[in-house]
Image (cartoon, rainbow, N blue to C red; front, side):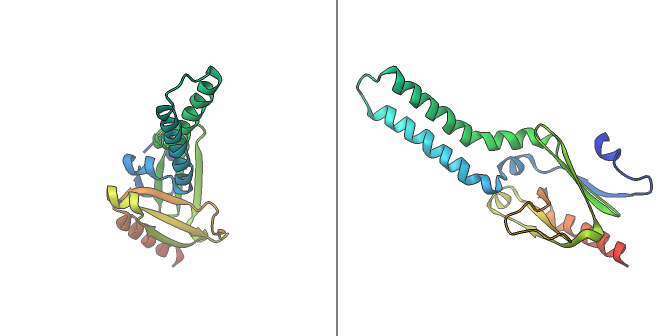
Length: 177
C-alpha cells in the first residue's frame, strides 16, 4: 500500500482490502467524455477526408486551419485517455473497517474519504468497457445524496467487483450493529 494512503489511516483502523484498478479498463472509463472523444474523431476524420479530396494547391492559411483541425481532433480524441493513463499511477482504493479511501488524480492528487455511516447504498455496475476487460465498478450513494449527473464516489475498473462489494457490505453491516 502506498505511503500516502497509510499515512491517512488511523492507528486503530484495520485495512480489509486495497486495490488498484485494471489499467486497460481504467483508461477507457471515460464516463461522459465519450461524446468529446467522438467529436474529436469526427473533426480528425473530416479534416483528413477534406485534405484527400482536394487535389488543387491549397493556400498556406487553409493548411494552417486544417492542421489546427487535426491537432484539436487528436487532442479531443486522445486527451481523456491520456489523462486517465497518467491518473492510473495515483489511483488506489482502500476499504478499512470504518471507511473507504479513494485516491486518484492526473496532476493533483485527490483523496476522498467516506465513512460507512455516511453511505446509503452501494452497487456494482458493469458497462461495455467492463464487460470487455472482465471488470466492474462500485458506486457509492452517500447521505448527502447526489443529483442525477453529479459526481458519485466510484471504485472504477475493479477485478472481481462482486467480491469487493461483499467485503464492503460486510464491513458496513459490522459498523452499524
